Image (tube, rainbow, N blue to C red; front, side, top):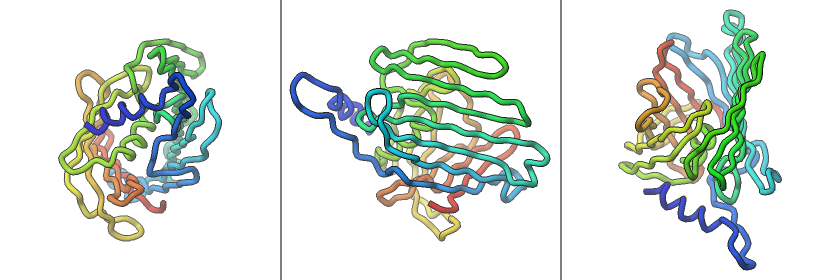
Amino acid sequence: MKYAALIVLLSLAVPQAGPAPKREQPVPFAAGEVLNYDISWSTFLTAGSATVSVKEKKPSYGSTAYYIVAEGRPTPLLSKLYGLYYKADTLIDVYTLLPQRGSIYSDENGRKRMRVTKFDHTARKADYEVQTATLVKNNFTVPAYVQDALSALYVVRTLGLKPGEKVTMPVCDNGKSFKLQFQAGAIETVKTANGTIQALKIVPTVIGPGPSLGRGVAIWLSTDARRVPVRIESELAVGRFVLALRQG
């Protein structure tokens, strides 16, 4: 299993007795990477836009981390009908590729909510809080090598999956942990704003109890060295959503 092999490598990054320095894990992205997407929803060819960027690599929580931010908003026309803004971020430790902290902020027609998760991987604990009109806090146990939703996508990019391979990793979202399996399918030709791209189709599935991802969820990663998500699809109760890479 690719993720199991990665775990072995990550264990080598934990400080041991002696002078051996920690080593950053190799990744197919770098600070400054910006990916822009068009969002289509049901009959709306362009319902909104999203940007996912590696803002910087910086000192963080006594280590060094990639600061990654994802933002999404509707088109000006749809925003007049329903105001919506989402922002998710994560700090991924460069030595372990584990999240230090992740948050999700949402503003739906003025209803604002901020969810923050701080990870203590050594103790296998997480502090979770939800800020609305009130503040609710919770501390709970998490599995070893747990990811948050955004960091999981970036870690999958590092694995170099091949058709037919699959990995399972623990993911923490909305104050709960569950297992998420990524099954690599075939390499397909995907149309983008910049032409056609060869991309590996990956289907994520929740194993056991956990949240619903919707039907027909799939991610296409480019087959080049960057392994960029060029397309993401999901069929939800409110319609079919597609994120298509416009630039990046």
